[in-house]
Structures are given as structure tokens and as C-alpha cells.
Length: 209
Image 1 (cartoon, rainbow, N blue to C red):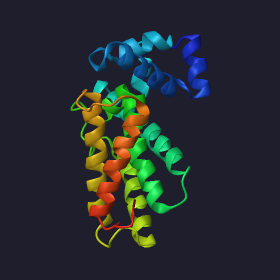
Image 2: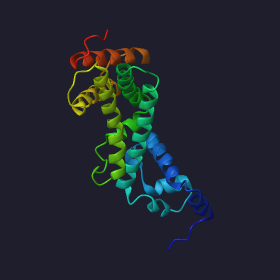
Image 3: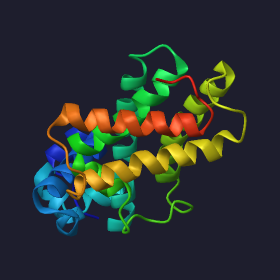
Image 4: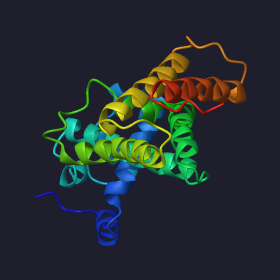
């Protein structure tokens, strides 16, 4: 058995090594890309033994899933903060769509990771499944609120949420790949807002100006 260093013991005593490793994982991804992310590199940055990260992550695939799950938590919190600035259901849904694209612009590394092909299967990595579904549930809830308020027609809220997600995600990807011509952040928000309102009209909100 590898002997723990004093720093290992202090970190584990306070229960924050896992969060420290996730923090450094985001650092590596932002600075060097996902390909350079290894458990050994995280151990080096955290100042712990090279075996210490394995107490929290089984392997690199498990690590990537956990980092993506953390990104989804930040994503949901960001969307909630934008929605909470509005009171009317339709405006809350609109704020969510705008917030989706805004998060992708502000945190491109995290956004890319959340939908990366290297992510583990969500049926195996339950943490990733739960956090990603929690984000989508936020959209379903927003759609349901609009239906209850009478600004969206009745129907399966999951289907409507999927439509709204596809629009928001598509705009985020188009912008990140320089396929969407915008002058600045304010112009981007106007584009997303117009797209969202066109979507609402198609889903049965004819009174949105």
C-alpha cells in the first residue's frame, strides 16, 4: 500500500480532494485540451500521490464523466440564475434559451465537454446521467409552465422541450464554429431572442411580439 503524504491526509481529512481534482481537470482541458487530461497530471497539480485520484475515479473515462457532470451542474445553475430574473413563464423560457447560448459563449471548454464523443455511456455513469437529465428537466418544466399559463398549446412537453433544445444547441454550435455572423454579445442575444419567439409562435404562442 502506498503511504499517504501529510498533504494527502490533510486533503482527505477536509474531504475536498475530489473537488480539487475536478478544478484541476477543468484547468487542463482549458489549457491543453481533453487529450492531455490524465489522473497522473491531476495528482501532480493537486500535489498528491499519483494513486490518490484513483480513490475517487476508477479510470480516465470515469474521470471525464465526472468532470462533464460537474459542468452540467454549473450549466443548470447558470440557466436557473437567468430564469429567476423573469417572472412570466414565457419570458422564463426565453431567458433559458438565451442563457443556453450565453453559457456556451462564456464557457466553451465546458460546453464542448458536455457533449463530447468521449463521454462514458450515461447508463453506466449514473452521475453524468442524473446531471444531464436534470438540465433537460429544467427545460421541460419551463415548457410545462408555459402550457399551464396558456401561451403554448397543449401537447407532450418533452417533445416541445426537445424542439427548444435543438434550436438553442444549434445556435450555440453555429456561433462556436464561427458560422453565425454577429457584431457583439448584444447582437447575439437579439438573434437568439428572435429565433426563440419564432419557435414560440410555431408552438402556439401567437400573441408574442
